[in-house]
Length: 447
Image (cartoon, rainbow, N blue to C red; front, side, top):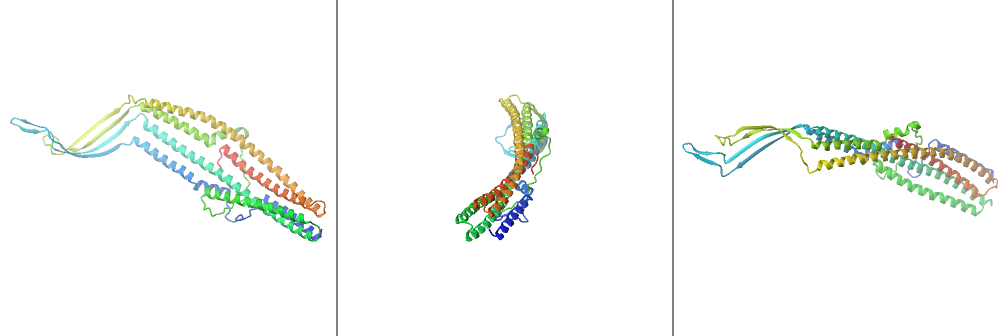
């Protein structure tokens, strides 16, 4: 083994350690269309794009606009109705009779003209309109909460997509560095073979290892293209783009005391809030149905002009009608009875659903918190494992140069370093994702 070869191996080990430090500092994006660029997307940028451009958000926003319209429609119960009617009719025969010495008297004209302006106003409906308005207001509140839930779900999709893409980018970087190390080792083995210090088997085994890593890199490239397509779909970009994400692994853990975690989630989870709003909505509907038994008092007024008044049958004269009317339900074929039973059943079902949601929230919290704790422990474990793998690789280089171990042993040590780096990267990403998952389980906004 010449001194120059030993020096090159030492330099390579030093470069490997430096590249690992760069990865820990949050650097490392390479590969086709995966280089550090000025327009790299942060997680917050991806979330903002998703919740402002996605069609499901637009649908939820339009539902709120529709709810405003329904509120205004419910308010129309307080407003009068005004319309105008006009008619012409020719009748025959008309009623006539003759009185001696007075002549013939005609009761109706042949041509009848009439024009009226009609006014109808509900005077009192025993709370029907008020209850309908309250119902539609609650509908709007539920629509606003649904919008929040939609944004939260999209944000979690964005988080998963972002960290998957980040892992693939960094994994390609690690594979590129591993390929660089293997190619340098291959050059060294070829030179050693020329001097009789290595065999053809050692050269071929190194080439096989390089081919395996290149195959893994191809798989990573395919996976990253899929994730980029998913990201483009999520944020509404053209599919020809190849977005790059920034390396952000510094997610902050929620600061909530252990004894208040469940109560906090019960106040902030979208599922809990929506179920409460659905229950309120069902109770309002039950109240509206009960009001169907109540009477309705209304004012009717009509004024206009028509002919047919004696003694001048063909002369148009002003006329009017004013009156109060009351409608009292007596029997509606049992419709109200069964509608009440249906509304009451809906309230009972929502009570059971509330219990089911509470159980799920508690389960989600335990699952998310356990996953977060285990992910954090794995980060510590794999950090130690990588440190040991680097030391082992440095010793393997020295041993190989001294002829103590074979080429395969050195290649195995190199592979262990690469695998340890990937495991540590995955553990860090899993920990970051687990924090967002725990936040979602608590009901905190991810966006």
